[in-house]
Length: 299
Length: 316
Image (tube, rainbow over all chains, first blue to last red; front, side, top):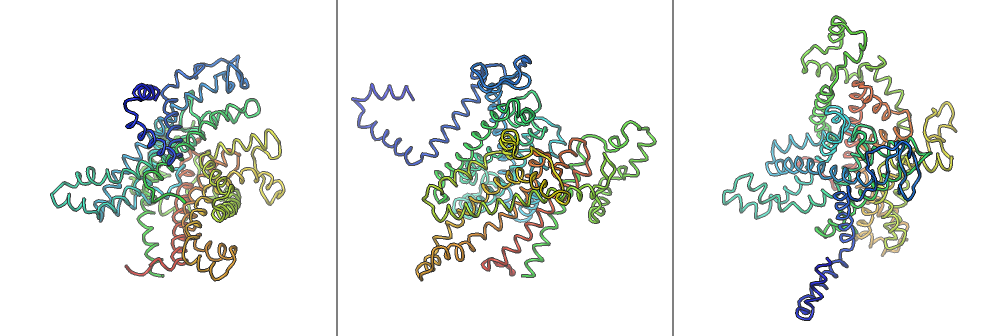
């Protein structure tokens, strides 16, 4: 950004006519899509936070200092310390890494399974569509959190298995979205054309239809990421997700509830982190919807 | 209409079959041998084999599945591994507490959602409408357990207005029962209000721009009459569908809120059963949850077809 500006300043006398319109267009774009600009920025900041967490922590998030246990916020410990004397701020920051991993991996599982099954069902139709549709109906009938708990019970508690369970929870929504989009796309001329020139079924599904249903999937991914973080936090809160000493926000809140009277920041710190993260994923999804598909714009 | 209902019920059969098969397979894949859980220390090869035979666990899986289905059809969910009590009895004991909490939360939440949704749609440019949108977006981003924890922190630890958790049956002490109920019910209500008010608002907004609304206004009807008598009736149709999905989230709410507030309901029972590996209870709770969801959506679909004559329920 800074480098670009410097360049613009030095080159200004020569290229003024070319640069000004572009700058204006950036400004118009920002003015037209303020929500997208704001929440995309927050999203990028969260990414940077997760990748640079190790540099941003003030203490080792895992080392215990029993002597400093349960301190309130201070200059040394911005959000105080937990019952083992670990720095809550550092654990919250490190937790951003965990939450990003949850978002990426769970949503990836949901997308890969949901999109491929949805493509298959929507494009094949007939018996395959019917069978897959009933399987998705069956999954949706299960109370989500209980299904996730059973999956984790089968696979064993832990962050990795919690992410798998949460990913599976997001499959039905992704399946239905993809299938609906494919049904629409199938009736389009370009799919007919591809069929006529003899393109294979797989080629049509992945090369022709998939790119055209990508926009709704991008919106889905953003909202699913927020849901994934909520679901994983709930599993960890119930003790079946991330195991100690992993600095996971849900697990930290559970742990903090035992010390609400002594030091509420143990629960409030990670709580605020979850709210900000999930809220910005949801809002980014909303803003992307308005940007990518103005027809759906909520009034 | 009868034909539609029959076909809709028939369409549930394959889904119900898949639900039972998946649940059966999943629960049997959970590591740990139920026979060992029951026998504990007193295990010998003879007692082990005898109990395995008695529980039917020495039979092939299809036979076990068929026997299980027949028992479940008679509402016999077997016996708890940890206490030996009947699972159906355990759930029946816990059900009133869960229903009390969830129904109160849903009703309060729905009233709040209607109030917020209608006001935000009618006065759509107002400051209130903007606050309402922010409220609903913010509260759907707050995990239920965090909302509960913050509620306990403020109302129980800080101000000491409500107890941090616990339960007294209504028949024993109504006053105390309600005192315990308010905080957890409010947490559920806030979630439902946030979730439902968005849909009510957008659905009503869409309706308010229809021609028949303009006609009603043009013939001189007051704003209140038009919104409440003409627009709301139609706007609530999509919300009926949504209420079917809400039934699913009630179980979710039960698990989380009951854990946070030590509320002795079915949700808490299922979490405790995961800890004690009491599989028959888990199996029963999940099955009941799945079937209530399916039946709720059956009722919603029929209701929807009944309310909206545009839906064709004749032969296609």
